[in-house]
Length: 314
Image (cartoon, rainbow, N blue to C red; front, side, top):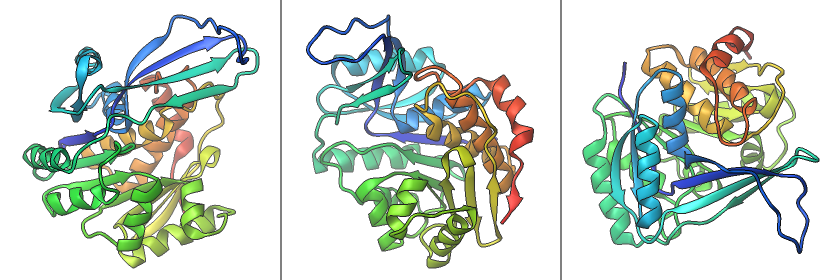
């Protein structure tokens, strides 16, 4: 299998609990929380592990909470490259209101980084890059890390490994505006794609046209756009495909995108073509929304859903 490295500069300890009702001004007594390693790249590594693969997770850890997160990562069976982050590692809280099923997600920003720490992280990533492997940069960036950090990583890696970037906000805008060389795979969701396009993408064909436009401009060799319950669209110079998401009961959307990326890159690492990897990602994302809170997916569910997600050309 092709080696995989995931990058998480802004990890979190993810806490998830239930409460009967969310109301202001009173103490809200929650259930015992579920505790998981969190952050985009870490969730990708967790999904890969659940699906029977292995990856190495580069993780910035700081303070006492960083030590606790390190123990959670080790308990998950994920191989880790630890990097000293500033201050305390952040926490995030997901609360599900059982009376309505509504989910409330509270995300803290993380401790600020200096430019010197960013440069030190790049130097450590440089040593960790697997030659001929896959590198996944996913999740938010800590305060102080430049918005063009994905471009810095791309320049660092060059042709040594495949680079997949799953980002949002200003970093995504910079990538699509600047056409950074050596971005192999770029993933975004439908709202991010609509924002970049300046209009809603009404159907799969419009989404595929937009993704193909980014490929033609040289933004990335492969562009993936998630369309929520409608599945995902993938465009490369060789073609455009759509994988339909099966109908499932949605319990929690937390981590569904990262689970998609984990299943997608694991399929690539097993030498499957991108359109087949797309189906694996869509099945895994559907399986992830079936689980509670921050649990991600179950391997048996992914295998059961996979036949319904076969890719079709657009």
